[in-house]
Length: 324
Length: 250
Image (cartoon, rainbow over all chains, first blue to last red; front, side):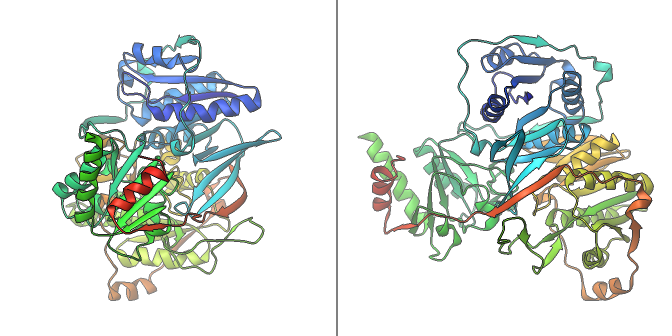
């Protein structure tokens, strides 16, 4: 199967999510004696393309109109590349950006699409895909009928690949600006700069829930513990709804899906919708003053305590041992 | 202005999901069903747009399904939809076929905005809205947390990976809703009683001239239970000790 992976980048380097998408693509390519190409879209792509070449042969769509990832023009270009070059499988990591863009691309390519794939196998010539449904309460094994197939994968289920031994080649695709749809205008982006790692990429994630009363407490308790562990911060839906945390920190069924080595849930009750976003973490710790909180059912370690007392103590002890 | 709100009938999210003995399907027939929460948010937003508009706005709720769907469509009327339409269909459609049916219906109904949930909480695909926009050749603004109606366009705040993106699109457009767009109201008892007498328009699938071609074949389903046993610790010191020596994560 000839496979095209759509890369995500920040203008300088590939996002780790793309390296997870490559993991899925390389596995399918191996089992089907196929090839993998990386499609990079954007503007002034020299450094991103150079990095991408370390992972796969690259197709570069470089144009001023592609500077921002807007669904109308990105989907148009991606679909054209898939059709013109006869790719049988289009792959991307299931980020918000991909849901927007690859979703529309799937619609242009006939809707043979499965999203949030967590496992796959090849049986005979059939590609079988596992995907979670009902907020992860169940998993469906599906097969896509038709071609080209479009798949997005959960980064929490596919570890990032290593670079290859040698760089591959890169092709610049001619982009006719006048043919690009321009139906969506980007007015602004509001994003909080953070020195902390991305919640989907960090080894340790510390998440806070309803028990936290305001942003200062969140920073002190959740942020403080995350910093002591060099980790990322996450949030339950409740805190985002009340404006205490920004939306991009929400872990859950309709937010970010994470599976770090260590997930610490502070003052989070453990609603099904939150568990959907973190229950596959390697080690789960829960601190909650409610003995019966459902979070304890998915935790490896549970401490019934008030996070306002337990977490400062935890931070102090961690800092002490780091100083020694 | 006409706003079309496609809705899906889904199992209430807090229900315990069971799988059939042979693993071929979910056993959900006897569980309570609701309007997909994200579609309820879409309906609420459409009604608010009508309430705040100085010009005429019509809100039409549409659902694709069989006779049981009428209950949810009546709820849509009770909440404030001007009209509710059922597109009669016995089988459950995958996102592609939902978008094929909706596209044909949109071409009949000619709304200015299609306002729908970003994902259905049973399937969690997050595809149908985007598929529909692509097929119609309309702009899309997904994961909306705020919508402003401007003169000839819409300004939409979108929940993105790194924060909030603000975009503008001309109408007609497809908008999908995210959690924080609004908090849906409850229907009052008088509205519920009135809705009982209202007509639900019915559209036969073959009048739309579409062909249903399934894109997804489900081979089996399974439930995922937690296999972890929670080790309760008494204090912070114990927790740190076990994370270091046992779990080896610190």
